[in-house]
Amino acid sequence: MKYKRILLKLSGESLMGDRQYGIDNKQVLQYANDIKSVYDAGIEIAVVVGGGNIFRGLSAEKSGMDRAQADYMGMLATVINCMALQNALETVGVETRLQSAIKMEQICEPYIRRRAMHHLELGKIVIFGAGTGNPYFTTDTAASLRAIEIKADVVLKGTRVDGIYTADPEKDPTATRYDEISFAEVIGKGLNVMDTTAFTLCQENKLPIIVFDMNKEGNFLKIAQGEAIGTLVK
Image (cartoon, rainbow, N blue to C red; front, side, top):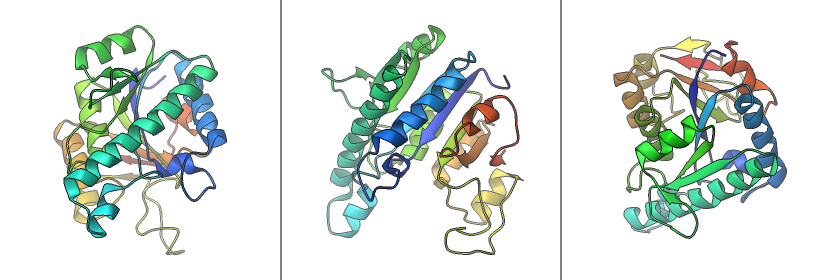
């Protein structure tokens, strides 16, 4: 295996499957099986999940809601998604711990860095919910921050496309995919795969990011084994 410890970032939208909103249990179960295949290979895995399939703070702000209030609502949405993923992982026989940046004792543990690392060392998958616990920060930034805190080897961003393109491939058929790209190029060209804060955190801490298609079964394991899947940002 190429990596010892991985931080996997899943968008909330990826949990929708073919639905227009909400959670597709079949899609979540597919992710759980893919994650288990990497877990079974002996790799330590932490996961950050977004909440855009349920509520998106930026969209609510545009319709007149207070941004901080909207962001807190979005954080609660991420916890719902994390619980769905936790349930799916435990259904396939993987022990997990869910930690939240906002205290919810009846549902999950509070986020404590040393406890999270201890869980990983004991062979449990740790799922981080509620983003950073602060408004004005995305779950992409939360993923970068948690990855740095737990000393992950790489951030893997699982999306519905197979990497970073020169333009949105769903809108521009002439868009071409990058196999590898630098942080400076991503920021300079305004390629909005993750927000600038997330990229900058990884750049400053020399933490590589791989953007790949999580919906294709087996891709996660192939990346863990060192295959060149998706786009590497370093």
